[in-house]
Length: 453
Image (cartoon, rainbow, N blue to C red; front, side, top):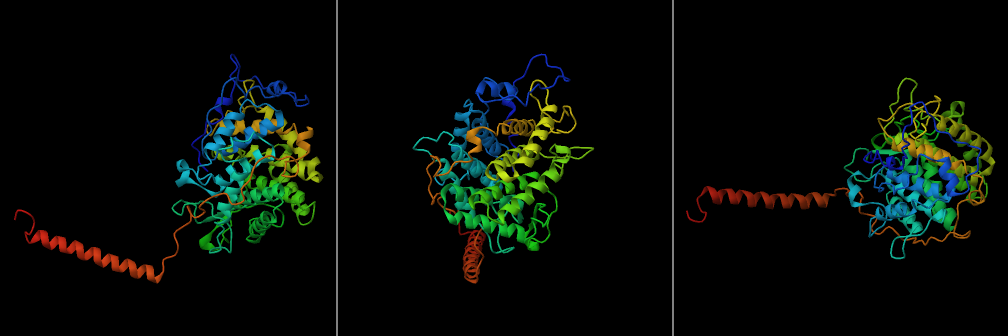
C-alpha cells in the first residue's frame, strides 16, 4: 500500500493549548455515548470544528474512508459525512467505477482496490447517505471491485489466487499474498449476505479453500503472509500481520451468519478468534507483533493503522457471530483501555498501547495511530440497538442500489497475453522490414543522393 498520505488524519487533532507531555487523555469508558455531543466528549482529540483534510488514494486513505463511515454509524455524528462521501465517489474513477483511478494506476494493488471496495460495502451495510443519483452507488461500487478482481483470479500459477499487485510491471506482481485473497473473500462474503446471490458465496468459499490449501492458513489458525508464483506459492513467508487475520475473521463471521451458523464456518470463526486474541492481544492489549518489538518499533506507515482494522473487524464479528461475542468484547475493552493510556490530553496517541504512557512515536504517523485510537473508542459503542441488529441487507432495510455487471472493462489491468509462434513470426517480418528501410536510408545518405547534392 502507498504511504503518500501519512498525515491524512492530522487534521482530526484538536490541539489543546497548554497541554503538558505528562497530561493524559481523560476518557470514561463506562459513560454512554448515544449522542454526537457525548461522542465528541469521549473523543475530544479527533474532531475539530473544521472540515477534515481531503481523503486521497493509497493505503491510509482507504481505511480512513471506512473509519469515517464507522464513526458515523457508531456515534450518529454526521459532521464528516460529506467529505467521506465525496472522497469515496471521487476515487471510484469512471467509467468503470471500480476504484482503479488514474492517479494510482501504476501503484495499484489488489489489496488497495479491495479495501476501497470494502469501504463502499460498509457504506451500503450501514445505509451511509447515498451518493447523488447521477453518481455511482455504494453497492454497485463494491460489485465493480469484486467483478474486476474475480476476472484476475489466476490459474496459471499456484492453481488459483490473486497476485498482490495489479500491473505486471509492479514489484510484488509475482507474490500471491494473503491480504489480496482475504480482502477479495471478505467482499464476496458480504455481497453474498447482502444480495443473497449464491455466486458470491461460492467465490468466498473458493478464496478460503485456496488460501488454506496453499498453507497460508495453518491448522492452528495462524495466518501467514504469502508465497511467490515462481515457487508455486510454496515458499511461504511465515510473518503474521494482524490485518490479514482481521479481514479473514470478518469474512468468516459473515459466512457463518450467511449460512445460519453451519460448519465449517463456526469452527473457523472460533479458531481464528481464539488464536488471534492469543497471538495479538497478550495481556489483553493489542500488539502488532511482526514489527512492534520490545526494543524498537519497525512498523511502516500502513502497519501503524492495523490495530484499527482489528478492532473494527472483531466488533463486527461479535455482532454477526454472537457465540464469540464474550471473548471479543473482553479483548476490545482491555485493549481500548491500553489505547487510552497511550494518549495525551490533546488527543495525540501513541502506537504502543501496553506501556501505560505516550511513547512519542511520530516517525510513521500520526495518521495510523489516530485512526486506530478512534476505531478502538468507537467500537466500544457496540451495544446500541442499530449496531446489534447487524449489517443491513437488501431484505433488512439496505437502500443502496446495485449493479451485478458493474466494473466495465475488466481487462484494463490484465497482463499481456502469452506470445505465440504466430506473434514471433509477425514480429520477425516487421523487424526485417524496419531493418531494410533503415539500411536503405543509410545507403541513400552515404551515396550523396540527398537533396542538393
